[in-house]
Structure formats: C-alpha cells, structure tokens
Image 1 (cartoon, rainbow, N blue to C red):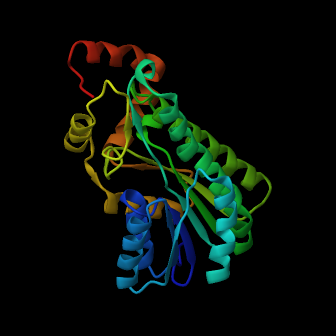
Image 2 (spheres, rainbow, N blue to C red; image 1 turned 90 degrees about the vertical axis):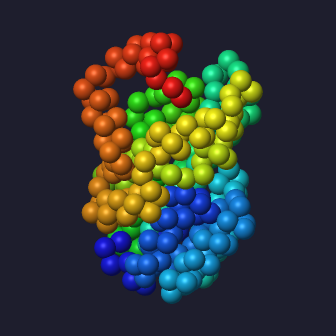
Length: 275
C-alpha cells in the first residue's frame, strides 16, 4: 500500500460514503481499483469519477449478503488485473430503534451485511492477499462498536463483532507468518448517506433521526476519513480511530469502563441527551 501505483485495490460499499471516498483516494494514488456495491448506478458513478482521475477501473454489482456471489468475486477481479493487493470491506448498513419495536428482519439484515459480509469478503480474498506478498485487509467498525448505544443495539453489536473478528484475524495471520496486514478502521460521525438509507423501527421518525445525526454528530468529511484510513493501512496499524469523536469515545470507554451504561439512559430520560 505504501507504493500504490500499479497496485490493485478492491472496495466493497464503493457506491457512496467512505467506500466512494476510499475509491477516489486510491485512484488518485495511482491504484487500479475494483469497485463493488449493491447499487449499480452508484458504483458506476464512483467508477466514472475514478476514471476521471486516470485510474483503471472495473465496477461490479455484488451483494455481500450473497455468500456465493462474494466467493466468486475474486475470480472476476483476477481475470481483469491478475492480482489483488488490498481489500477494503466497507459495505455497511444501520438500523435504529428499540429492540421491542423492531422487526427482526431488519435486525438480521444488519448482521448479514455488517458481519457476514465482512467475514465472507475476507475469506474470499485472503488467499490472493497472501499471494501478493504484502497484502492489506481493512475492515470498518464504528465508535458505536467501542461503546454500545441505546436504540442502536444491532448496529453496535455488529460493529463490535467486526472489531473482534479483525483483531483475531490479524493475530492468526501474523502467527502463521502470512504477509497480510489487517487494519480495523473505527470512524466516529462521518458525513455519509448511511442514516438516510437506514432501516428504522416503526416508532422512530427516520427523517428527524437522520437530520439530527447529520447536524450534531457527522462532523468528519468522508474524504478526510478515507485519508486517515489509508494512512493507517499503509503503516500496518491494527486500529485507526477516525475523527475526534472516535478518539474521545475510545478514551472514555477505557476510562470509565462499563459505567457509561448507567449514565446514558439517565441522560436520555432527563432530556439532556438526544438521539
């Protein structure tokens, strides 16, 4: 990754948000990119922007919840480029609402995309990252995976699972002597469409929740987030905290431990903290 010119990078969830920003940053560095997303129009637009930067690009519609489709995807990338040097497993979704009010189909969807999608992507591409001789695998967790948030139980759990999976995988690859550096990116509030495209319990007001998130929490630009993630991946870091809020949450989680679980409900009931 430190010498991206001529190297091949795969990005899932490349149709928008951090995935698109990573694709553009990689293209600007001279990488050849393979971009995947469930939204054909969105990933095609990302591809068009990457080509404007002079990059060689292929785009594919891939559903990361389809295990067979993910398993077959590396063959298509190798047929185009002959190798894979870096994989950014970015595809992710969110669900908002109390579990009592939530449809389990929506909860299951979060785990299918955020956890199974990451695991299947890693499994499919790992042999090729090993073969590259200096591979990089980057997953994306969340500050909500550092400290669980009420009304985001499925999302928090899925992102905590991504952190644990990534940490375990990084260690086993190192223990087995495989030349692949595994990095977990942990963004705080980043300006992306994820909240407006999320699923919500019937008791929630999606527009109000998304507007509040965009106004009060999403302080980091997706492009800036991508640069921080690439910087960490290039330096083979285990974890990359993205944004001042992610750094704050990480510090507080270490400082107070599980005590925050008593504080947050009180603040919510008192109206001192809003979702």
